[in-house]
Amino acid sequence: MNLTLKIWRQKNADTKGKMQTYEVSDISADMSFLEMMDVLNEQLIEKGDEPVAFDHDCREGICGSCNLQINGEPHGPDRGVTTCQLHMRRFKDGDTIVIEPFRAKAFPVIKDLVVDRSSFDRIQQAGGYISVNTSGNTQDANSIPVEKENADMSFYAATCIGCGACVAACKNASAMLFTSAKVSQFALLPQGEVEADRRVLQMVEQMDKEGFGNCTNTGACEIECPKGISLENIARMNREYLKASVK
Amino acid sequence: MAKSALLKSSLAKKYWMAFTGLFLCLFLVGHLLGNLQLLLPVSETAKDQFNEYALFMTTNPAVKVLSYLTYISIIFHAIDGLMLTIHNRKARPQGYVSFKPSTNSMWSSRNMGILGSIILAFIIIHMSMFWAEMKFGGLDDTIYTTANGEEVKDLYTLTIKTFQDAQYGLIWAIAYGFAMLAIAFHLSHGFASGFQSLGVNHPKYNGFIRKLGYAFSVLVPLAFAVIPFYIYFVLEKI
Image (cartoon, rainbow over all chains, first blue to last red; front, side, top):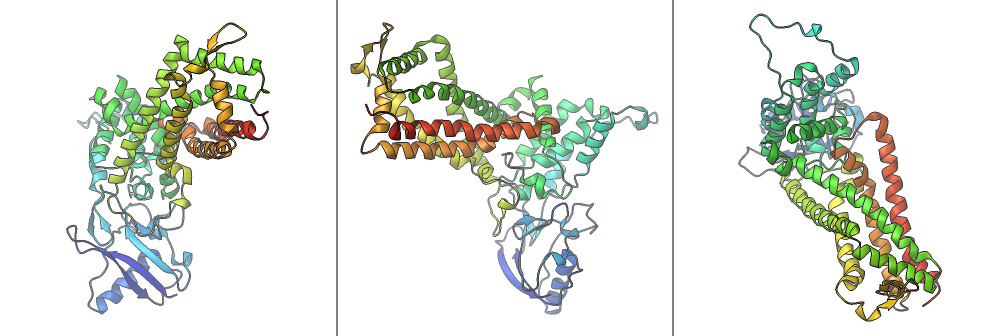
């Protein structure tokens, strides 16, 4: 199929970017979206032009690296997939596809479609961990009983790959779904209880510092999340935070 | 840290938004129950009843406490909402060329600020027309003694005449209906959203809360909106 691509081009973080139009031809319906981008870049390189920079790593939907805003939606029109799992069969011959970077003050553009998501790392570093004694007498995790339901919910929260689609989809560029998933995965386990108060207070404080917006409960994040992280996590974070704040 | 967390953080703003919003939902129910008395057939009894009720609502100490809580809630809800909106705008300085939020969220949930602004404008006009007249002496020359021997201001006649006015009655009723529509959309998201912000979310009860929110957002504003049209079209002219 032949496609028209409108892509955000920006030389570096300090320059102003703009949308640029490209034509690509002979795209197979079996290609992934990123493979289509590879074809475009090969064409550009052959012509001596600068290829389009975009993030990618595992290309199997588990690393959270790829992050394109495709036709107004993070990771494109399909639900429950990352950009690398989106296939060109989803598009028709002659389609125009608008490709932009995820937009948020806390996700500054580095180049073209690549944004700096280290704000997520800093939220995680602020409290998204548990302190474990590793001096040689570490307790076997399996010896601590965990209710099956909590174990499952904790696991679902932990499936968040930190891609940033929640921020990209949110009209307020809020990072509450991400932060709440990272709070929840520990809040639901006995291992996470020890640092529960400090964790939620510090992670929310860091989230605010990074310049993310607030949650309006529109639910856009949950719909666009490639891993289906539920709004239930945000409510849990709200409870955890309230509990920690009044102590 | 914990103390400032409950006042300044993003989550604190949401808690207060939810708390004041849900309190105002209760206020709406109370206000509606009072207003429904305007549907009574025109008579001295209906007039006395409504005016005695209005007197009670402006003088009873317990009601006064609730009134001040309501004023504070409205002001706080509006200011907090404005602050949240400004902050949210700043969180995405460069917008998208193509953005399709309609594929993942409801219109009302994305436009709470606009809906809230319409409602605030309505509240200001509404209070200047009735509340201020009652409070600041506009109705002092209408004071009379009811059959029960109570000295009351005649808010009843002012209300009925406003919506029965030959020139502007219907326009006021339509404007009132429009404001109720804004409230309906605001509540269709706000009611359930308030619970979520306060952390009340459980798969077992979410469906119920959402349905209750939709029912509330349709029934309460609809019942409010019916009253001015009923006064204009059906009620006996006074």
